[in-house]
Length: 211
Image 1 (cartoon, one colour):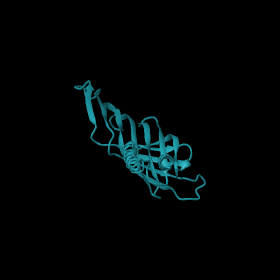
Image 2: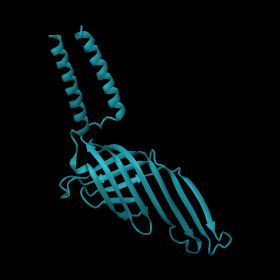
Image 3: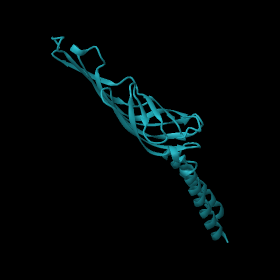
Image 4: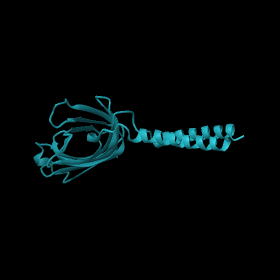
């Protein structure tokens, strides 16, 4: 009588764990804002747009304290002087925002996403030729980072983004994003903690009914 009861408890415990994990990971996902999105449509100031639905504009503010190395050629001849600078640094703490039109027909107003950059890298270069210093310098920026945050309607998103922007040509990029209408997917540490708690509960039940 005790053995079938113990087996039933073990099966119920395993089913409960599976249900919780499945619900936390897959429930309430927003298909339109989940997946891989290509970016195109460079605009001055570092703004990119999705070229396919949800037709969103993307903005980000990378950390300002990036390592910079500067040098120049023909430094003594101001008419021919060329100044160079290369930048590199980690991407943590910058802001990342999206304005998305979730229905291409425009029957609903756009929703706004505001998140933070949780990790990644930034690199780039700039050069200025001093005999044509009237305009902006030529530059190139590459951002590769992860992010997380919430939408104006309460949805939650997390993912990764890659963006390459230059001032004299165009900008390209991509975003891999998971959007959920509920709380975020638990992190691996949460799963470990939850699993440890379940194992402890299983031990208590085993001692109680295994006698």
